[in-house]
Length: 282
Picture (cartoon, rainbow, N blue to C red):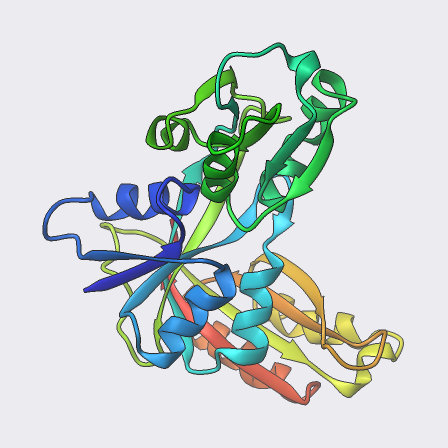
């Protein structure tokens, strides 16, 4: 099985894949991609069998690249499982240096936001620059003589011959990222743990999204049936300003009577309701 992730080697995404699969010889071939969007679309195009991509962080919320790809482009891709990885960002440089000497800090936008308070306090004069992944950031820092540093996992520092200046620089110690397994629609969900609860994900949108009470009426279809929502998030519809797509996660299987009825009733308020997946919860 070919398993895609946000590369190159040394990212938190690779760590999540290896942790979730056990990284044994029978775990499958790990295939890195340069962006989350390309990872998702590789599933859509059949280039890989599954992918593990980040969808939500405990400090920074939803990962827009994943949410938008699933809602707007990868319409033949489904969520078939999830896993949660504890995140521990490190400040990494090519060699030992004083923090005051750091001129630039580079990383993926998510770690930069997850460590924003540390950056303000510890390296207030450094320029912060975003790149495509944590591993790319560490690799770039390792290749330059300039006084640069990166935010990323300790494993990336070891992989690219760099030095950890500070360990665990996340603004909160309980930093964690939820990743979802993606596969072509119709693929069975990942095998659940014994007695694992299930989760169902849906995206919906409607022309009435600027009418008073429209969103309340949509969400009430779940409340009236006792379906507990675990997440709700809005994203722009990529059209006129002020119109949104709404992503919701809920407890239960899609075929449970209450969940199924709520999704059907939601369609009465919306132009589009799409099931993104029903899968064992982490």
